[in-house]
Length: 398
Image (tube, rainbow, N blue to C red; front, top):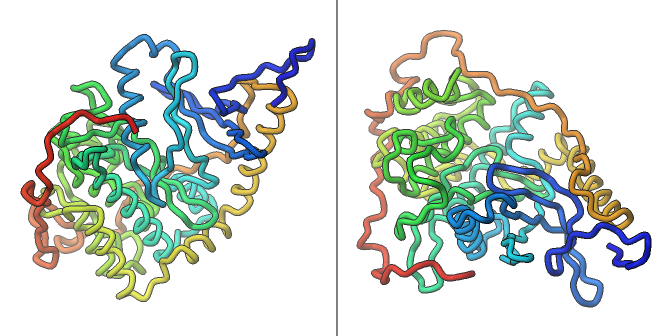
């Protein structure tokens, strides 16, 4: 980006070594920008900048909410979690510089599959969820600088917050409403539901204390919907949705898609137990369950299979998005930063239909998850005594 002080000086917006190129999105608490990082010896890298909305900077609670997210996520280092490069400050306004993921969301995959009137291959859907579980587990295992386990809960795992690259690599995004259960620290105000209602766990909609098993339930919802291309819990309004989640009557996935093997269906159903003591205790356990079921069914679920399918159905979209990034950077270098530059028009999204069986399911096919089958033995949560006895200290800066 030019810094010519003459009459044709360009409107620049620079956060340290990061030059803003285009605003990507504005949410309730922050705005997201595409930016170019410049370093020594011609180093350049496209990044994403997240900054608190200006009118919220004066509110200490929102400022701390934003900084807490940055401190946590900056400590996460896993291939299935978006990487944070820097927590910075620009003229008193904190910002996060993070990895730009050249990919599409799980929601985009679902929308494209619906538009093409075809299913996501069972192996591909399973492979996507295996990686999503790996990312979630890494977040759940996070410790602070003193080695204290934080008990981090994402609380907003959904198809919108899971992305996959053209190389078949899944990334978990957006820890803006995460909670560190062991420190009693959360990044949203008490008394309000946090997250997308139709991807919440029963304990979350009832506003009970949460642990990692709440995220396991959310992963189970995403898995069920990716495999069936049907809505599981979403109803005509939030209250009806919460009642459906709490009731816990979930059709087995093979009712909506006959090619799903019983072992894979059982793995997904176990993640969706209403009683969290009967649920997988960790996302890692869920991942192992999916892997075992996929292997037993002879599914091809590896990164290469995921990448091949993603490039096949989303190749043009991936290329268009990559070109849009290049165009935005070049436009900023040529014309300066234009905060209100129009984003590229996205393909209209498709809505998942609710699941309606062709006949009433039997008691075996639809499980009241308060009384699970003996084939899914209960799994207790990790007992506190298995965690190191560290003194509880406040989170330090990343």
